[in-house]
Structures are given as structure tokens and as C-alpha cells.
Length: 513
Image 1 (spheres, rainbow, N blue to C red):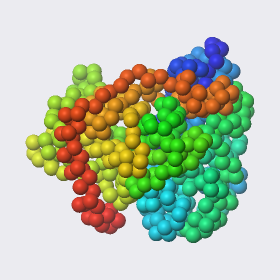
Image 2: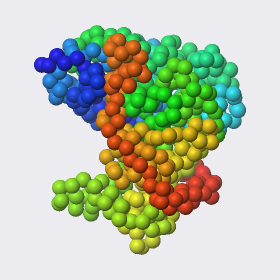
Image 3: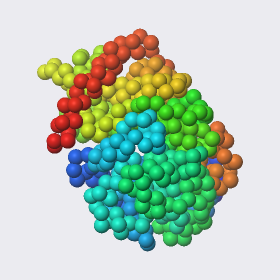
Image 4: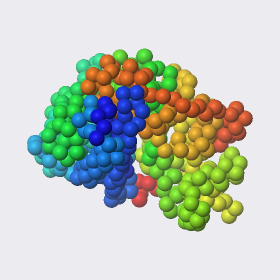
């Protein structure tokens, strides 16, 4: 086997895990992935199991080593990223007590509203607006109120990345990358906002949280013998503190200084930037101190369902197009993109709302749902597809506007994930937002970001910013078209108005059902 020095990144997404090996310049050596199921027992619920996670991680890592031909002893360092905020509880011996409540699960909308109603100063990171049902306090409170016996039995409350770090190292730590954005941890002002947790009836949860909150890339411990055996790796590999997939993706896009926006695409879209000053504005999440780089603040926007909507549409409504794609030996998405591009901006009067799993920002509204307006007998699947893509782009522009309103003027969007594969989608994003889109050589930014954290953990680079500068390469740039931007703006304004007009009606229907 080859003894090329390399770094391992493990990226746990919503539907699959991807493992990647990279050299010290960030060049990919090999990737491998495995899927796992998502369970949705009720509307708005989403769960997964640790057994299926770990089996997939072990299969992916073993497959990666075989595929790469690299000796496991050549892996210098490693780290991980996972979905966030995916909440878990365990007993004293770290036995998991219930399925993980996924980041996209909105069952805690009632608890989120209760927390919002307190008006506590800690809520500044919600832009003084609605608390999200995906946050740690909301989900922990849901468990306490609805599964009190399990909550009482739980000695540990944490999230997915903490579980994976424990599986790898035997140490239970928390990451500043998840606790600052989702747990209301505020290091510059003393850490945990005790009065906030007391006010919402969760004073006892603080004793259940991991004791140590670490910066990204901090060496935690070496890979344990048991984990190494399961994964097909060598014991003792330095493991750096991991974080949330999208936030670690910022590292993998070299968005580690102010001005740039990272857009991590996949099942969802996440929009992230760094600023030197603390910022809080309605409709924007953050800013979060030290969440990615110590001394800098992170701001955030996000769309809960984007790629998930596209996949839903392809799976359920594109039978004829799938058959044509199979006949021609082409991708269904290629045919959808070609058909959509032949249509005018606005999809012949068809407007969609992308709130299939609620709205994350700027409204933090879990009780709205997706919608199409303007359907007629003349519309085809290509019209619906174009309307879906446009709605996602409008949602992104709404988030860019909240950043501008808060005092941060984006100068470009650095993109990774599934949307990169579609030239139609990336151009539409550029045109709607009127910003250039930068495409990296390695589009699996979270996976590369985790490898970069591993590089810092093992001492290959002194810090995250130095490592990212040396390991991330931008290879393409998509420029916006001013004429198309102007055409899109009519529909963008109608997209925004649609929420204000229909939200009350949607709230009634959603909560009734």
C-alpha cells in the first residue's frame, strides 16, 4: 500500500456519510460514501439511529482505504462534521436512549415559541426574533415535556458531532462550532447563559451537557483501538474537534475571513459569513462568537429544504422524464435543466414557495409549508422544476438582503454541494442575487474542511486559516447578468409578498393537521 502522507475527513450529512482522503495541498486522493435511512413518523418529524450511522461510517471508511490504496498508517490526522442541531440523549454509560432528533425536525415548534416569549437577552443571536425549533433548548425542552422518564434517565444531552467524537476518541466534548450557534453558548460573556436556561425550565440540562467546549481542530485524543478496528484504520491517529457540516464547509471553501459568503448546498442551503464585529439583526441568525475562527463572529442564514425539494420532485413527478433519461443514457437532472432553461424567467407565471419543512430564515417559521401558485393546464414538469429552482434562489436572495440590512455587504458567494453540478442552478443564483458565484476545485467542502481540521490537529499547519489558504483552490467563477437580475426582481418581490399574504392561513392548516 502507498505511504503518501494524507488527511482524513468524515462528513455526515442527512442522507449519507462521505469519507475523503486528501494530501497536504488539499488534492483529493479518494472518496467513498454510504447511505442511511431517514425516518419521518409524523409530519415535521425526522429521526435517525446511531447503529445505522456507525455501520455506514465503518463501511465508507473501509471502502475508502481499499479504494485509495493508501496505508492507514499514512493518515496523519482526521476530523469530522455532522448535521446540526441533531439532538441525542444517553445514560451514564453513553447508551443512546432514543433515536436522534434530526436538525430538520420541527416537532419542538411549541417549545420554540415558549422560549421566544421569554424575550431573554440571550435571544439576540436569533436577531431578537423567533427561536428555531431546531435549536438545542427547544428540542431538549420537548424531550423533557413529552418524554419525562427518558429525560430523567438521561445523564448526557449532546448532539451528533459530540457522539461521533466520543465514538472515535472515547472523550465526550462539545464544539464551539455547534454550541455557540445552537446552544446559546457565549464565551466572551461567561459561557452558558444560566439565567436563560433557568427561565425556560432547563436549568438541569446544563449538568447534562459535555463539560468541555473546544475550538474547531483542537486535538481531542488519538483514535481508540476499538474505533480503529471498526473503521479499518490505525489506532492513535490525532482527532481534531469537529463541528457542524455547513460550518466546517466554510473552512473547506476558505471562507475564514470577513466579506465572503459560503453557501453549502445539499438537502438544505446554508449561508454563512464572518465579521470582525458583533452583529444582531432581525431575520438573521448570529452573530456567534468564535464559532469558526477565534476572535471572529459568524452570521448565518438558511433554507431548510432545497435539494430535498428537487429530489422529491424528481422522485414523484418525473416518471416519463426518467424513462427518457434511461433511454438516452443521461441524467434526469440534465433533461430537467435543459427543459427549464428553454422557459422564460418566471416559468410562465408559476411561482413556488420553498417552505416544505418550514422556513429557517428570515422568518424562523416552522408552521408554513410549500406552495405553488399559478398552475394551469399548460404547465409541464419543466415549469414546476424551474419554479422550484427559482423559489430556492429567491429564498437565498432574501437571506442576502438580511445580511445587507444587518451591516454586512457580501462580495461573492463560495458554493459547494449538489447545486454546483447544475450550471442552470448556479447561474440562476448569481442572477437573482446579483453576486458572482465562486466554484472550488473540491466541491465536497465539508469533507475537505474536516480534513483541514485534522491537519491542524496533527500539527501539519499552525492554524485553520493557514491550512485553508494552502488546501483550498477556486477554479471557476459565474458572473451575474444584470438584465436577468432585473427580470427576476418582479417575481422575487411577489415571492416575499406571498409569505405575508398566506402565513396566517398556512399556520391554521399546519397546526390543525
